[in-house]
Length: 156
Image (cartoon, rainbow, N blue to C red):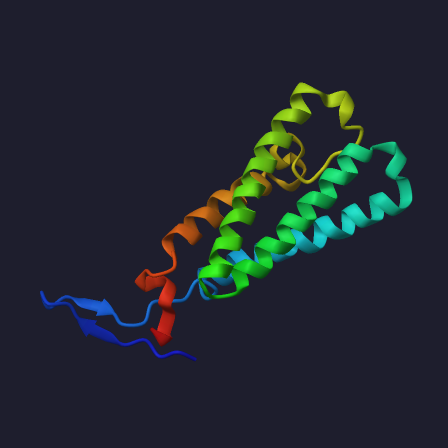
């Protein structure tokens, strides 16, 4: 594991010489949350599409789309590098747009949604975690932008 050392700033205050990379520490918890949503939404969408797609094609298609977004976000968050960061940022922004858009849409046109999606009513069926998760993801990504000390990790 990477050893953390303290160096001194020019003013003499201690400073972390090796900040935690984006995919470690709290980042690993965020990746785990995304992974859980990726697996659960994929399994749910696959089952719904294979067994009863005609009952609610819009809901089931949106569930499949959400699963794809969660899969991409999970994989990109787990990787280090500027390209992975950009892909993760785009995925999390799409997720945020999706949960806000679908959440609002389910209130404005409830007849269209015979069955709930992951993002229905802003993720109400999942304890509103789908609404909170993209904000946490964005915060973490913006704190670990490529080129910043936090993004470099122990290797520099």
